[in-house]
Amino acid sequence: MSLQVDWHQYNQRVERLALKVHESGWRFNQIICIARGGLRVGDVLSRIFDQPLAILSTHSYSSEGGTIRGELVIAEHMTMTKPRLGDRVLLVDDMVDSGHTLAAVHAELPRRFPHISALRTAVLWWKACSVFKPDYWVDYLPDNPWIHQPFEVYDGLDPAKLAERLAGSSPEAAPEE
Image (cartoon, rainbow, N blue to C red; front, side, top):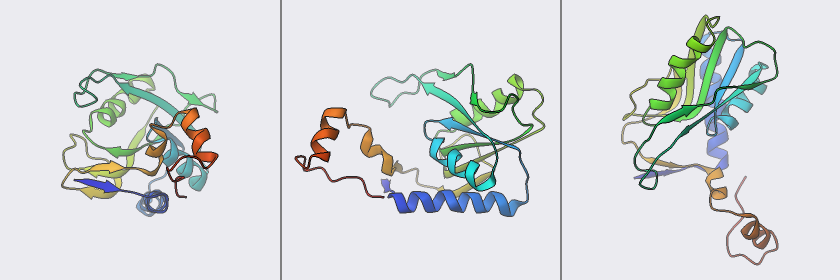
């Protein structure tokens, strides 16, 4: 089973997530997004709430074509524009699938930054198979579908294929906005 999401649906979910966080009444002074999936979500929430955005990269070295989860690596440093991380943090990602990444980052942040006094999580999709429950989500997915997000069109697109597509010589359609 899979879920196809176009740009309009994706953007609408990000906006719904922002509204859920706002309506909760919880106030924060920092957004941290988990790269890569949380980059777009974090960027939009940072703009809507006018709060600084920090970017934390993670990577799970997997095998068997990505079907077996390997060791999770959390980047040693975060990219941020302020000299000090805020103390009330909204941690965002696009989804919580297995939940291992979000759980590990959620546990690691207060260890690295002991001044954090409050930490909540927000995602677009929360899958039932997850070991971690986010604080905010837009869609709960009880059947754990594979989610095809609109930017995945770029996953197999190298510069040569892009040049062909833009020149109109490729049968592949341009991504919808």
